[in-house]
Image (cartoon, rainbow, N blue to C red; front, side, top):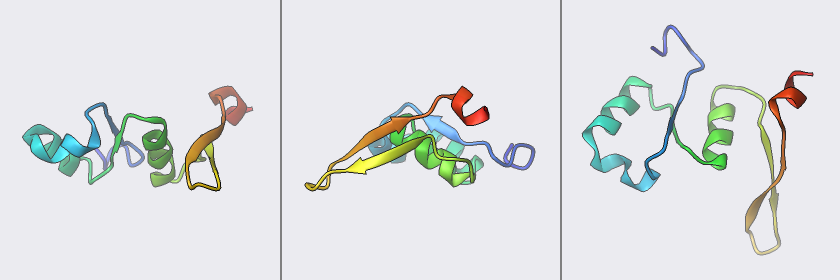
Length: 80
């Protein structure tokens, strides 16, 4: 599938910490060439960056080191 769709990724709804415990997830991750990301805003952002797309989010890091989403772009804003 990655040969036919070179920018495809898998957004996995299972928490990332549990991926190693499920045979089917390990197999799918291998089939996807490692392009598996958690189904979270951060995971979506990493997936977009991983395939060379424009990032959807900008992160704001506080003085304490906490990261939060500062801005979210809609698809319409990216396309027009």
